[in-house]
Image 1 (cartoon, rainbow, N blue to C red):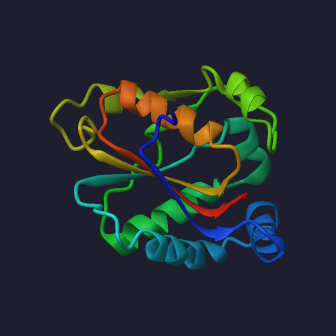
Image 2 (cartoon, rainbow, N blue to C red):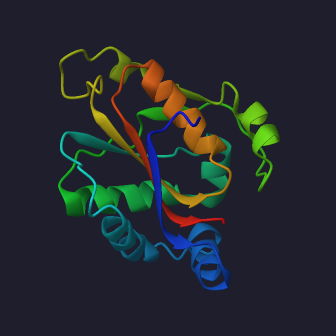
Length: 174
């Protein structure tokens, strides 16, 4: 069973969506963030998002330096603004750099062990504006491949005491 409660994707990862995702992710086409956020709003229209926090899947600092932006964070920020939800871009920190591995869940899960942690300010803000205990989490990423990354993030969030974790991705590999 996955650690998250629900996963939804707006599109199937195919020839059409692949071109958009890759140009957004590696080709500096950051203007796609608004379009992708609108797709996620459509994909989430039946979900109860009350009392939810929006969090992007983080990039490791080495990958962030190379890419110059976190594509999930760009989408998550626009999504949160359009839905009037709190946006917490730094709640999860990616401490371990892992190579990209498409389609191999068991190897990916093994490589992701210990890769993520919750930033201390969120663990220590009991009752304050950064308190996530018991709250719904909307975890946003661009592509859902095996679910290993989403599962690793959801596990640490749940260990920290959050409520249900919903994964929203622009595309899903089927």
